Image (cartoon, rainbow, N blue to C red; front, side, top):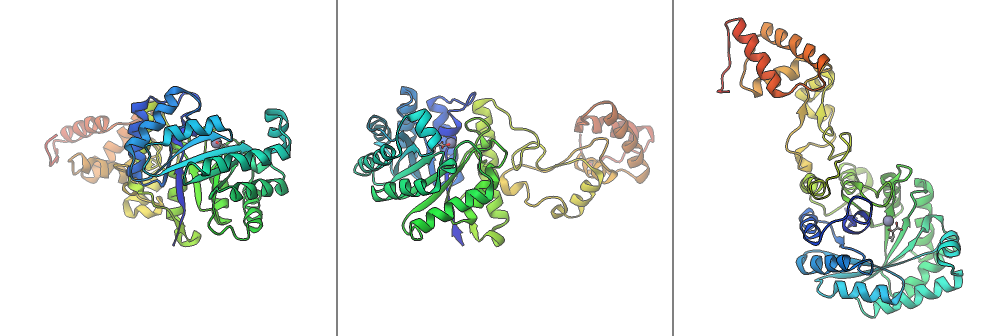
Length: 394
Ligand code: KIV
Ligand code: ZN
């Protein structure tokens, strides 16, 4: 089975988006969780951006010994020097340098000609490679770059010593077929890209971050840049938890997997939420509160008979403590019976019917029926009938 490397950029692309900044101690906590998760690379920050960013990179490098730590730099010497300073203590450092290659960015943002862009790539990647054993080059806005020029830019980066080439969909504009075609073209241009790792980095502006990431894998890409909970610039990056579970669940079809320990995913998501205070949507795949919650009676019945009827992976496999059978107006008697048994009751059919009637009435009035409500109802019903059959202490 081919392994796809996971490059986590929660502490860089994620951290640089509004509402997600982290202090140095928070970055260290998060980095340790990412290491436990088994990611291959942690991008720890953008050292030229601020003293705090430089300190964060330094601290993560000191603490993390089990995986590669990357730091970002524009393709400029002062940026690269700052990143190298940050990476000095890393066990496995990676210098990640980038330059935009699309005409739009070159003309309006950088005021560079294509020739100047190629020169800057050659000079700065070489400068970085002479000072760091592992260099990644990103062609910012690659997905909107004219393909012939993109190949030239990638060729220059490889010639100057970059061994990881990242082709981002910086503004989340690509659709899967064209993103995959771009990689196939570049791999052809590099004669199969032996010794070079191609990398995907997808933003989610059109909600296609994960789909584009998958298309890249199918085109031969073997490094994916992702963030926990999908945080990142604007609409965010492709969510790490979604991509790694996708590759795991569909490994027989896709022929690839990752080194990630799936049972650490929920802890990583919760830690990020705790640190930043930003909650994930309840319907968020894998880590949302409803990802393993079932309210519809038909679904609850299926789950109780065999969880595979309505779950493609178990909650425990991704570290979620327990699936929830939510009691609401759509839920069925079987789920209520399971809840009552969990709470220590063994209701007769008649008692179950009465409890069910009361639960549905309550659910119609208030959105949630809690275990406390169920306990109160069970108590009333069973006492009223003089046949309380509770078997466990409340
Ligand atoms: O989205 C992007 O292009 C980036 C690069 C700096 C890798 O984040
Ligand atoms: Zn990005």
